[in-house]
Image (cartoon, rainbow, N blue to C red; front, side, top):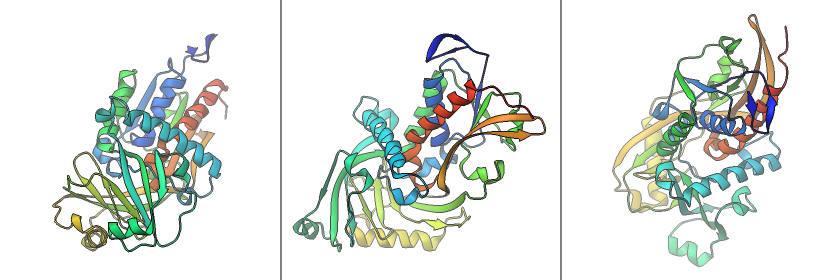
Amino acid sequence: MLFKKDLNRKMPISSIGIVGAGIVGLSTAMHIQRELPRVPVTIYADKFDRATTSFGAGGLFRPNVDYCKGVDPETVTRWSKDAFEFFSSLATSPKASDTGHMITPGYVFSNTPIENPLYKGLVFSFRDLTSAELQKLGVDYKYGYQVTTVVTYVPKYLPWLMAKFQEQGGLVVNRTVNSLEEFVGVHSVVVNCSGFRSRDLVGDKTVYPVRGHLVRVKAPWIKYWVYTEDSAYFIPGFDEVSLGGIRQKDNYSLDINPKDSEGIKERCYKLWPSLKNAPVIGEWVDLRPHRDPVRIEYETMKFDKGPLKVVHNYGHGANGITLSWGTSRDAATLVSKAIMEPQARL
């Protein structure tokens, strides 16, 4: 087999398996195909597209170091920079309507000053709002910021990633993976992008759920987003506007809670009265897989059948869309390292 970095060097035949077909799994697959173009890659999952946690995300690029505890801020900045460069290149290209990327202005409101947020130096524009501007907008906050960034409309982006992966020869297997031991002797390296399932799949009990809940409304007049410090925000997509939000740590319920629904609507209607008559067209509830820190790691796991090289890429929580492209680049680098190393023996 020939490697991209040394086309004259022959290596043993290898293959890579990826567990998970959400935003992290597909992004990792894309990077591996770029890094190791001659190595076969197969994705294993039992949930795709709208069944994944990624599908329901609002997709606003606004990275927050507070949600990446345990990770060096410089690393979070690098991941975010990689993501914004990629997303903004799609948003400004003819591919935007297919990939679901939009350059979207918006506002951040708070009663405490936001000083030098991570995204300030990455996004298209960032400036403080004056008191007169806040008054004209009719919001009851002391501080406001106008930010122009990228929104990723995941219902378009996920299928686009999958199509690109398969166009490059990637294979997809619809299957529930119960243990990574299933891949011993099947793949040279396996990448674990199983998110919250990593609690069971690799016994990582430090992964915990942060329950999210969005209310979708039809509001075509909304062409901008608004984010506040008071669990009230809205983000436009291609065909609807997502109202949020809920961040409930260690709540495992996937049921739509009417109290949560009413609370979200009440907060958003108070924040932005023009949303009040927008018809509700759907709701989304899922568990964001959170870990402190995000796990980007290479290890050799030992099973009864033998050793298995495993690269982990999971635990992104609320920063899943934002960090996916950057962390997946690091994961692909670890896969390249793992492929080059001789297999360990029991």
